[in-house]
Image: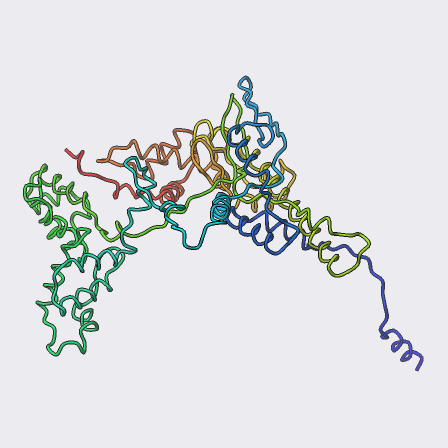
Length: 523
C-alpha cells in the first residue's frame, strides 16, 4: 500500500524552473536581412512604401540636387568613395576606406520632373493652350541619336500586328481575307505555319460560306502571304522557308540556282557536313558547292524572330570601380533610391511624458523610421565592404580580363570580413558592379577551381576564357575536338577532364567540333 502511494505522488504535475538560451530574430533584424537581399528596383519600391506608410519619413529634397551634382562632378571625392591602393613595387593592395557609404540615397529623376511640372502649371488657367506651355513628348531632329530612333521605330506591337498591317494593304476578297486572318492567327513566333491548312481555315469560314473551301484556294492564299515581310514567313518547313527567301533574290545573284536546288533536294546532306558525299550527289564543282552553301547560310531560318518585340532591360549598377592614379576606387551608386530623412515637423510634436494614443503613434513611427534608416546604412556599408574585398582579390581580372580570374568562394570573403556566408550570399545576389570591362553581377567573381601542374589552383572562369581563345583561333576546316582542347590545357599546366571541357564549352553556348566545321577552307 505504501509503494502505491509513493508511485502516485511521483506522478503528480509540478513546476520546474529551467534556464536555456535561444536565438530569435526580432522584427528589426528581419527587416535588415530583407533590405540586404533586395535588388535595386526592389529596394526603391520598399523605400517608397515606407515613406507612404510612415509619416515620420520623408524625401530629402533640400540637399539631394546639390549633393548629387557634386558627387557626379568629382567621382574621386573622399566623402563617398573607398580606394584600394595598388603598390606597383610588390603587387600588394592596400585598402584605404574613407567613409564607406552615404547615410542615404538620392532622389530619382522622375520625381524631379514631377516637381517641375507641378510648379509650372500651378497658376495655369483652365482654358489655356497647353501646347504653348508643354512641348511635345517626341521631337525628332536631324541629329537624333540611336536611342531616339529606338523609341520611335516601333510601328506595330507584335509580329501578328505587322502581318495584319500588310494584309490591310493587300487586295483580298472577303473569303480569302478570312482565310488569311486564320493563317496569321495560327502562325508561330518563328514565322512558320504548322498543321493542315483546311483545319486552320475551317474555323474562320464555317457558317460564312456555303461552298466548301478548295485546296487550291487555300494554297493560293498561302502563296500570297508568303510574299509578306519578313522574307520566309508562312513556310510549312525549313526547306520551304529557305526557298521562299531564295526565290525573292535577284535572278543575277551568284549561286542562286545552286542554293535553291541544295535547299530543296539536299537539305539533310547539308546538315551532315559531308562535303565529299554532297559533291558526288549534286555533281557540283567545289566552287559552286561552296558558293551555294554560303548563300544558304546567309538566310534566316526563323524569319519571325526578327520582328519579335523584346523589351530591353537595363541594369543599374550598385557600385562602380575605376582606376585613378594607379588606385582602384570603389564607390556606391547614390542614385539608385530616394534620399530619406526624419520629418522635423512630426518629430518635434513628440512629448516624452505624454501617453496619449497620438503621441504613442508618433513615438512608434519615429523608432521604426530610425531603424529603417539604420538598416539602409548597414546595407550600404556591407555592400561597400564586400565590393572592396572582391576588387582586392580580383585585381587580375580588372587588369587582364577573365583569363586572370582567381578562384574565390563565399567563405573567402566571409572570413576576410568576419561575416557569415549567408550574409555574403545575400549581398552578392542581384547586385551589380560596373567595371571598365563591363557590368557584372557580384556572384560572377565567385567560381570553382581546377588544379594545376604546380599544385596551384585555376579559376573555372579563367579556364572558360582560355577555351574561348583556343576555339576562336582554330581552323574552321579542322576545329579542335574536346580531347584536343584537353591536351592543349594540359600543355598550359591545367589538369581538366574531357567531360569537364565539354561542360564548359556547352555552358558558353559553343557547339561541338563537328558543328563548328566550315567548308570554305577545304581544299
